[in-house]
Image (cartoon, rainbow, N blue to C red; front, side, top):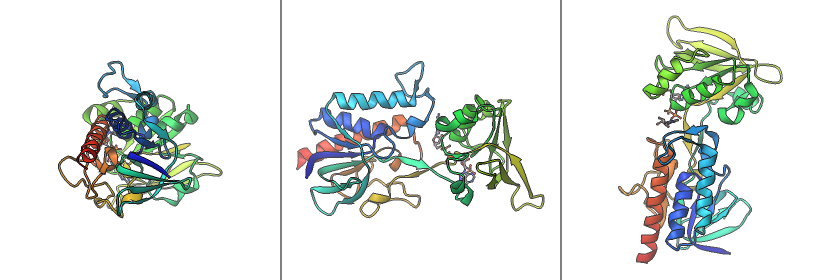
Length: 311
Ligand code: NDP
């Protein structure tokens, strides 16, 4: 059986930063990459707000750099996903999807978050046939076509603008009468001639033979002037927020109603289980920025080191 002083679960900015700090503190960490190596940033375009890159840097490049830095300082990075944990007693036991078990004296959970869907049966029916939650991954297929993006936050606006650079037209389906996105992003979206914002609209379903050909919309749901109509589209993109990847750990670690970890104290990374720490988006319902995730990964590794040296 594999043993480590520090097991890190997740390979976003939090996980890689924790691996860099833990390696440099001689903890010889093992990092399990999870289903999406590099995390959510591998699905973004240019990042202009991560300090140190005055010209911006692409998400995949930033994550490759972080991974390489972790490897350079000695982190043992492995592919696989965690399927079960046993935090009853030390060493903690973590089961990987290949059936192997790793024993760890400390664990840093940095599993991030995953895109949310509306819950329409048609999203499943047309998955991979016109439905996507990642414009950067799939936008290429919609060059000169018509697409819709659902959501009114920064992600939705960013995706709508990205898609507008490829597609002929983008509908932005927003359930409220306003955008929740930052002012700069709102301006960019509202001033983009290729984007038509449909305020107070909801998607009710999709239609099409062998792929998405249109969306069933309702405007001003529940109001006297509620209206149902269809719009022809080729692609349907979800950008309505994220769900934290905390399910496997919920038996032992405290979460809020939406599944985000609730840290045990104001370190922001300690949990009710001594030696088990949380970092990154999976414990951050508010800021969800790469720089915050990296910072909390650093804190978690420093706390893990302190925990081990006090033992
Ligand atoms: P948000 O939670 O900010 O926005 C989600 C959007 O989806 C809201 O407009 C919400 O509507 C809408 N929505 C949620 N559920 C549904 C539903 N069932 N049907 C229809 N619409 C729905 O998520 P984001 O992913 O946009 O952003 C998360 C965080 O990350 C934010 O803090 C954001 O600022 C940040 N971010 C920053 C970026 C940057 O700085 N470059 C880029 C991307 C994200 P409603 O308003 O009605 O709740």
